[in-house]
Amino acid sequence: RPSGYVGGKAPMFSFTRLRGADPVLGVEMASTGEVACFGADKHEAFLKALMSTGFKMPEKSILVSVQESLQDEMVHSIHSLQELGYEIFATARTHAYLTEKHVPATLVRYPNGPEGSPEVSSLLREKEIDLVINLPTSESKEIDNNYLIRRTSVDFGIPLLTNPQLVKLFAESLVRHKRGELLGLEAKSLFDHYQSETEEDTWSGMSEFH
Image (tube, rainbow, N blue to C red):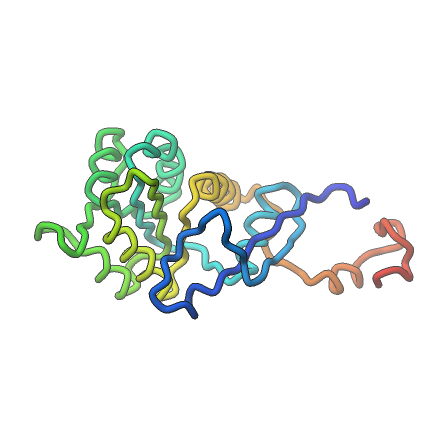
């Protein structure tokens, strides 16, 4: 058994081919594929696997829209992303909460919202946002607007996170990556890894799986 590595898998979905489908996961959904990667720890393995699915790391801006019952749980992760230098855009209730907690954010409005602030679907279509964090629950009232945010993100190729645990791990991993604490995020294929191994490195015979 290999030592010094942590393994992680990231699923791949085909929402871009399913026109009109809501890209939020349910308990019975199955992925169309998955990518497994090894890293020095869970954060490195997670980011490697995520990026290997085609996930693009955000460069400048992140949109957050979080159901009120999850806001206390998610504020630390959002604040961590803001401290990394990302501009945070937030929908009305999320923006009000972040303002209360002294987390800088720019207010955006839903398509049917009042004039005076940037409209969210326009920002997504114009690629002004690099990552969307949309965390609804069964208590969500903005069902149609949340669907529009998720669907527009997928249709315009903008990475989308809809799971609180995933957002927490992503924020933790990104902080460590930006601090230079991860060894590297360039994933090699299994066969490339085998070619670089020495006999002392192998956990199986040199003739097995090589």
